[in-house]
Figure 1 (cartoon, one colour):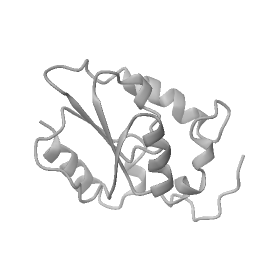
Figure 2: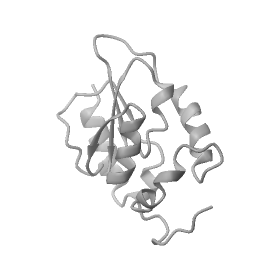
Figure 3: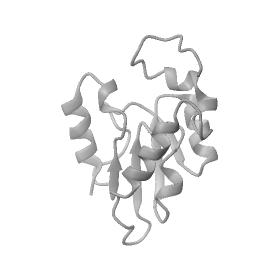
Length: 133
């Protein structure tokens, strides 16, 4: 397992571990099975061009498990977003505290493995609710 050089809970650490997102025995192996479990909670896509907004999408681990959605991923990590894009996610670099999306733009909002990294949990939840149709 790679050695982290950043402080614990620093979201930039995920950019340092870009090669670990998808290997079955990589540092994020547990997140892979969590993505499968989380996807079971996502309702089937409905309507024309349904949008799933994945906050702090990381390497896009949810992507293969939510077919039928336009999967839009937001993350702070530039290298991490490159990995997500390679797995079919439409990516945007940004901060979950101030979502760069209009009101009511997403059919589903996923915020997995992110709330422990933010200081203003209520604000992030309010932003997620704002963009949810």
